[in-house]
Image (tube, rainbow, N blue to C red; front, side, top):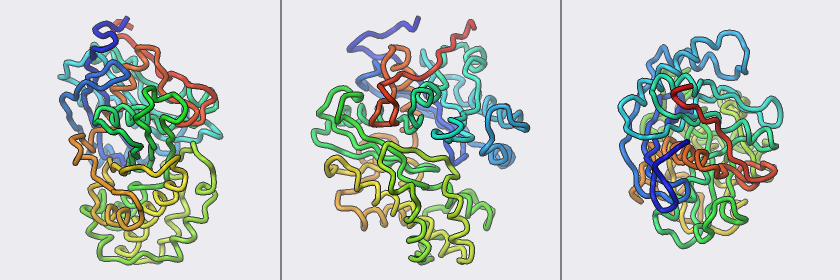
Length: 369
């Protein structure tokens, strides 16, 4: 049994997130009862080295049982053990590393073994958050929206607000904090907006040998190719009603759309595509949000933020301005979700993943086996 909390008191949980940008493992503590947030604790980061990134990139798109996954598995396990050591939290939320995501086809694949992690750390670990959702007809993503709802209430919002996470893929949560339970009708609508940082990172890696466009410097020197942008926005994904989700490399044609452009114009165009995806997403807002709070690495790209500010009618803010940590929100989300799993509370619902009914995903592994 997980002990140490009841309604109105918090359990200290630590979450780990290794996102599709493949930069490293974020670690963050949250004090919560799985409904309300009572506070935040320590944070940490364990970056992937160049060879580790090469190994993980080579595994992208591979499914369970495919050849050549051993090195990626060992990389993910080692990095998470190193990242999570030294935390006093009673419970660990372990997302693993997403290699493939095809909810309307083969399902979803996050590499990593929570049971082995529990044995190595001597702590209870909650993991495999997505499988139960997919098995019940859901997209399995995004999973942070219930946490976004809790954050809106923690911050004292009294009007609808939107959370935009710009990681490798973008996702948005339209949150109404006036509704107490995140799984209740009207509380949250969430879905993936489209590609975000991943195509830009891949471009910089392939052409310049750099991990990303630092400060948007490359895009700032370029011009958006409007023809390529229009072709991108013609993709059928943008005409699907939410909830909906994407694989990291779902928009493979983006590479071809910028292939003939110079480095700066290609970066500007890919950045423009990410921003335009968000503009399309706003068409699905249940009601106009009072603000758009931007989290994830994309908020550190001034060109991306300028494009969003120019395109959207509502105020656009770096979530750091609210006092939250935009680098750690995803890791905090899985700490929060781990406590919800431990309490038997749902972690997704029809309006966040399209699952048939509210469901609590996750496997709980204890250190004693």
